[in-house]
Amino acid sequence: FFPEQLNRFAGFGIGLASLFTENVLAHPCIVLRRQCQVNYHARNYHLTPFTVVNIMYCINKTQGPRALWKGMGSTFIVQGITLGTEGIISEFTPLPSDTRHSASLCQSSSEIVRDNPGILDCVKEGIGRVVGLGVPHSKRLLPLMILTFPTALHGVLHYVISSIVQKLVLFVLKRDNSHNLSTESSTSVQRILDAYFPELIASFAASLCADVMLYPLETVLHRLHIQGTRTIIDNTDLGYEVLPINTQYEGMKDCINTIKREEGMQGFYKGFGAVIVQYTLHVAVLQLTKIIYSTLLQNVP
Image (cartoon, rainbow, N blue to C red):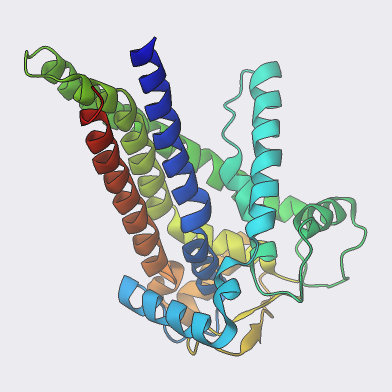
């Protein structure tokens, strides 16, 4: 019974640490990254983690810590809705249930500066936009039909890339672990860690590869989703003041051509430094969790 209880404790703790990193610790990086992606005004593209950390410090100093945690409540609501939707999809259809990334893109406007947004605003605005009620009228607001293709394309590509990378990394790690388990020197501590960490490392590598490879498409998608919503964002050059989003893209192709013409190829990678910070934090937490559990398990009689 004791080894089974120990395994359950280890699995719960390691999973909780990963969940905390993905949804809480990484949130400021995601907020800043999305603001950089839609900020066509910006002269500083924040391609490196050094400028990202600096602008985070400036925003925190001028607006307070809450500025970097915008949309935290709506993130958990969207996660809950997404998990429920995934459960229904996987239960009644043979389709893959990975709709999380597309759902998170649809809430991008909720995570950017607004005047005291309510915790359910992301749901209310999403339903309002689909039905056509309650959303401020704007000729620049793109019809959902125009947004459907790029959103679906991004979701499918993200799922395909992450699935391939995850299976590949898992195969390599489990092959290595099988060699280690066959040796006499393998300890019970190592066996418990080997049971859980390959899954986390594979999931981490899958998300990282998909996010990096699809970053230009994500930039385009955010700009299309945010257009016409009367959203304002932080000035990512100065760290204070706010800027309106007044783009007039006609669709995905026009958005790509405009970014390429006015901002250059690097314009597709605005805020990329935040991705580096986000995944560096994730690596640090995974490593710290592994060290803590190794220490705890070794002290268990």
